[in-house]
Length: 544
Image (cartoon, rainbow, N blue to C red; front, side, top):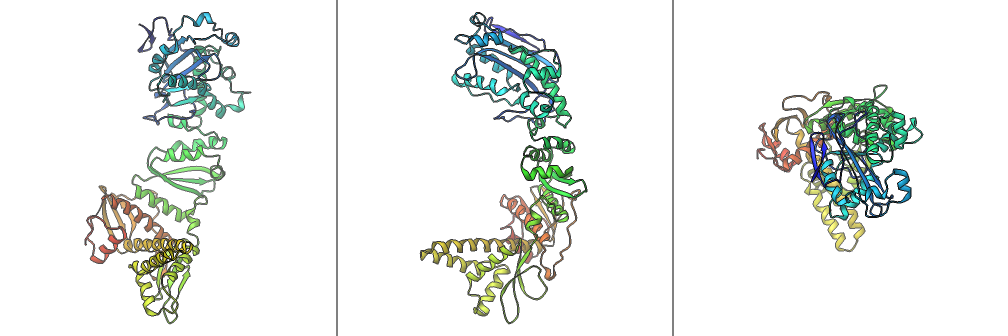
């Protein structure tokens, strides 16, 4: 067995099969955009200077993978601008070389007949590219031939991450060159090695083009592998890409601001940089494009704990009402369902509760949901002319005993189904779901508000609440979190901002309680403990 000489490595191959050169002149390389099917990589946030790239090129007898054959393979490995070694070999295709290919490449049948077959070359090539990011100019062409030969021999397809200098050039320098062919780009960047339609020359020229394109990408803040792989194709998103420069790969809340200081969008993520970058990748969508066009700055607010991030985002929504977020619009027409007091008792939809002795359910995100729940209550009980018994059932249902209303409505839905009135039964089921959800939300809001100051141990973190509103996590207030506004509605009922936050806190606590990760630290009086346990469907450690 012979060996391919590499910088710091050897790969065994058949005698006479492969020649190697450790000459890699020109500029250091870099990566470009991936083609399809990118595979997982351990450290996508690795700086490009620490990533190992292997530039690959093939010469073939034609353009159809599986039918045409490979006649030459070359590759060069780079890391941090240093050439670690090259791999080059002619390949016996087992068939003739078309005259056009001979004229284009200079590779004749006399040259390939003594060369090894692809079966002998593939193991050495796979060892050479193992663990590296593949790079090529129109890389899909080269990998499709390699994949076809691998599959034909019962081997899996290449799983390396891939970057393509053709795609990268189209996104970065398309307006500077007449076309993005390798020869055109090599002339534009004045590479030391010029492409000659021979595999190794094309590999070295591609590596130099790669580095020149990387210098262009660095001007947009592309310094790590994940930034490179997610480089947007939309020109607007590309121009706005430098806004990502100050965003960390950490949990928190991000705020898009316009030139006049308005808040356009508020979001949260476990990896803020990656989440915001995904918006740039989808920048071609009309609404996202409008957002990017108006954005001049993106701020980051650290919030390591998920509940702190949830509440910070909600309070920023309520404070600034971002024009590109749906939550403020959904809560714009806040409404309540009111069981009136006095001689003429009825259910009314109102926009603001009063301290008038009536019983309220809500708030709802609009008039239409409140009216639909009202229709469900009226379908469940003979409200008109039902007397004090019916009114008492409604009061009980609104005040913590949901079965007083849900039971009759469920019986009505079952009776309609038994009578064969499937359409009416289906509508009754929708009413039942809407009413059940409204009562469930009411129980969460009332249960959290009944606790007063409360300290919880949630998965080892100390969460401090006051009437369900978040104060701090692990004793530290979240930077940038607006303070909780005081309730403004009369009658002691929550307003839309308070209800929105209480429901978000309740949903998060309920998930954690179901996983057994919530323990009540602050002693609660029996009524408050019962309300809290009902709101969260039972919490470990809460008093009976």
